[in-house]
Amino acid sequence: MDMNNVTNLKGAFEAVKNELLQANKTHPLFTTRHEGYAVLLEEVDELWDDVKCNAPSMRPQSECVQIAAMAIKMLISPIWK
Image (cartoon, rainbow, N blue to C red):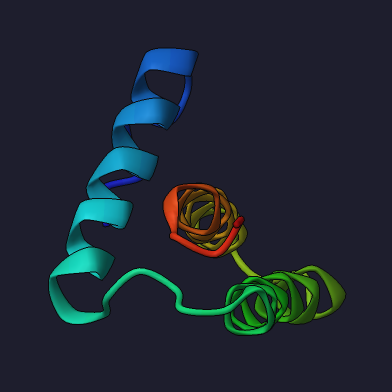
């Protein structure tokens, strides 16, 4: 994931869009709210691990992009009816 352009809103949205498109190639939309929550929680836990160990700056940024992508994936999944 190229994090060099995630310094402004346009770059951040582009990174999230690319992450979501890539994830959707290998994993279908969520089939339950529990599944969506579990995936989102896993990404947040990975960010927390990076924050606790003071990981290099690009790694937590990458996790933030993944969190945003999974939140959007949850929003567009057919789980809200």
